[in-house]
Amino acid sequence: MNAQLSQGVVLASWAVLRDERTMATTPQSDTARIARETVAAKPSREIVLEAAANELIVAVVGHVGSGTSEIAEALHDLLEHDELPGGPYEAEVLKARNEIEEWARGAGESLPTSERNDLETTKTLQDLGDKMRTASNDASAVARALVSRVRTTRANKIGHALVDGVPVPPDGRRRAYILDAIRNPAEVDLLRHVYQDAFVLIGVVCDEKVRLQRIMEKYKNAGRADGEDLMKRDAKAASKFGQRVTDAFHLSDFFIDNTPNRTVDNGAANPDWNVNEYLSRLVKIVSHSEIVRPSTEETAMHHAYGAALRSACLSRQVGAALVDKTGNVVATGTNEVPRAGGGVYGENFDTDHNGHSHDHRCAYRRLNGADPFCSSTKEQNSLIERFIEEIPELKAADGLRKQKLALELRSSGVGDLLEFSRAVHAEMDALLSAAREGMSTVGCRLFVTTYPCHYCARHIVTAGIDEVQFIEPYPKSRAIDLHADSIQVSVQNWQPPSREGDRVLFRPFVGVAPRMYRRAFMKDRDLKHGVHGHILQGDPDWGTPWHLRAVSYSDLEAKLADS
Image (cartoon, rainbow, N blue to C red; front, side, top):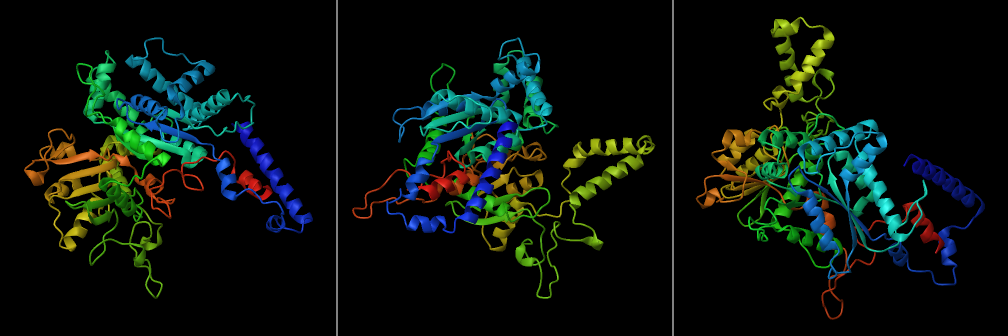
């Protein structure tokens, strides 16, 4: 990879010098030259479409026990189906664990000798994955190996010799590479930078209790405590080079619920297992084989995501959208500092006509000339300092020991305290916005980008909300612990409070994620014939938003100029 990068830099530099020399000696521009061509050039869109790689890169992410491999195999079978509009893909499932094992062999690390479904084997592979990232000082090391595997697989398929630093260009055939599975957010960043809009990340949703049960059934030597430890490590390791699935999961483009088992006890197909339905919808969106429009839930979460982007909170951006019984968005909210008169601060409160700032959000306020700061973190640090000073044994420690103690206390429950934040939480902002307009919240649904904290949870229950859907988990929340009498997380046997039920449903969002909303649903081609009005299907004239270009933008510029 380093050699390839270096060669790319050298070639790019040479190209710049070449173009500069050409411009200096050639008075006519490309535009002028093209205008004087007597032979008709190939249409621009044909050139662009010919540069389409027609490859799709799909990665799967999900917490341990969610069944990412099951989703990967189901997608593989669907993409290779002969009746797929536009023809089948040549699909390959590439497993991250295979890349970790190959690295371990090259690094002289001991590989597990027990069966692959043994708990200790899984723990060993987790350790090796951490070592692989740490040794390279690269949190995306596993994804980097998968990128190399995609290249090798393509070369084998098209009969292209592998030479260090030399690209393996796609040959235009429909191919899909399914990466199982992503464990770190840095891996997502790398894959998006490499494959751009041809990359899709599928997040696999699964009920926590179901995941634990699957772990104990899969690993016969695992008890409940073992399963819980495995889940905790998988979700968010302390090191940035460890498994941090929770941080990667919310970056997904599309969410699928795999809570129901594929089969029932007698081995028969489970009618509640609708993974293929989810995946078919995703494929329709990517292939433009049908007109697909967003669901009420997808639109509501898109509004919540848009509201989150308004926040200038130094900790996180959270958005909420309140939807009434008929599916209309009646209010949105963001986590932001409240202002007198109602609502929260925004960009229109920055300055007055005299240039004086009236924006008192944490990111912009300067108390006594000091740099902006997070009040919550400041108060937490103050508490920690008081703890250390109030306990004689801790007070007597030297400076380095006190610094270590402070870090240890911050990683404890002290760092989870929410009492000192100045911001109104997004859920509360949405509920209060509805209240100011005189709108009833009874029977409404609330869509939130992040799981509600326990403070918001009690207000959500009080407001008469039926259901909450969320994307990003929030481990600090004690909502279920404190309000198990009025909140449930399983859709089974649930009845909305507005229909004589006794609990509010908190469940993960499924469907098209906000980050993919525009790309999935924007009308980017004619949908009917201009004369007879019959529906049209297929790709836009200039290609789909999913097309990966087989050439770089500089190569494409040259192709357009020289044709």
